[in-house]
Length: 369
Image 1 (tube, rainbow, N blue to C red):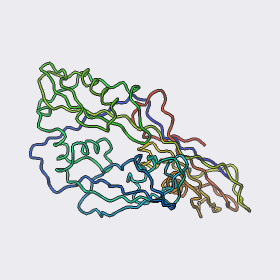
Image 2 (image 1 turned 120 degrees about the horizontal axis):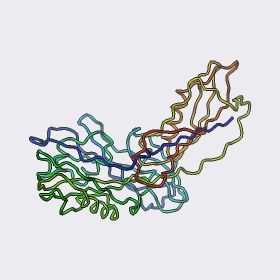
Image 3 (image 1 turned 180 degrees about the horizontal axis):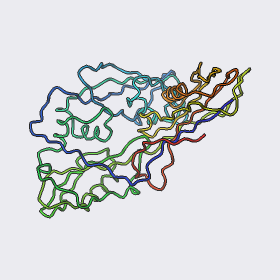
Image 4 (image 1 turned 30 degrees about the vertical axis):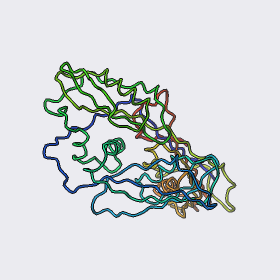
């Protein structure tokens, strides 16, 4: 018997409030041989039919931090492309928290179905002292490997006096009109504004320091900084970021329930002794990428789930592993003879954003059965 888990990752109902850049005391900050910024250089996409694939719509993976002890090597992802140009059937086996698979799932190729595709990513290590301001700022928007080292923050703050004590205090923090800003599916848009303060605490010379390239967000961010107010005292080279979370990337179509396996004895109604703990794959949730998985399993008389295996998962096998883990940690109520031929259909969905795209990032899942 088939049954469906529906997993919704729900955004907060609170208004969007990006945190300020951290306060870092930079006196004596220097390169201490700590972590480096780590990027991934994509190679060409090749498919079984040998036809060249245009990669203009490839989303580049987020950068991370590497320590000296971390292994480095090329990573190849295998996948198919559906008729709309989406990457599907992604074999994402590199690391549960890495962004290679999610970035590929957010990419879009020319509309033509292709099978047996692959892409190889080559690691690129960048010392914090040599990284561009754009790369350092981009990392702070999605710090997937932990906090940016102090040396990185020192470079972002620059040579101005905005961080000298006593530091300016916010009296009024204005925000962009996000209704005027287009979001991008699977990609966070952001802008880092640099500005000075006059003697009365009014921002002057507001300008874009760097960003993701969303011109509408840049325009609105500069206007928002100009409307903000601070405690008095002229300062130079202050900073503030604004960002817009990604639009949702819908899951590929999920096949309908199939016929029940021959000799299956799975009951229609499940009595859970330990219900599944429903969790969204975090790396895909970060990009608001939806997915699904179909899991087959049996149940022992004492309620333990066994012989569980992934039948199908899209757009990445990461959704299958997540669903399998959730189910294997659950337990059904005991029964006289157990059950065979059970099928779980797990849908990972982002809750529709009600009224605004400016809510805080989703952190708590909701469930429906």
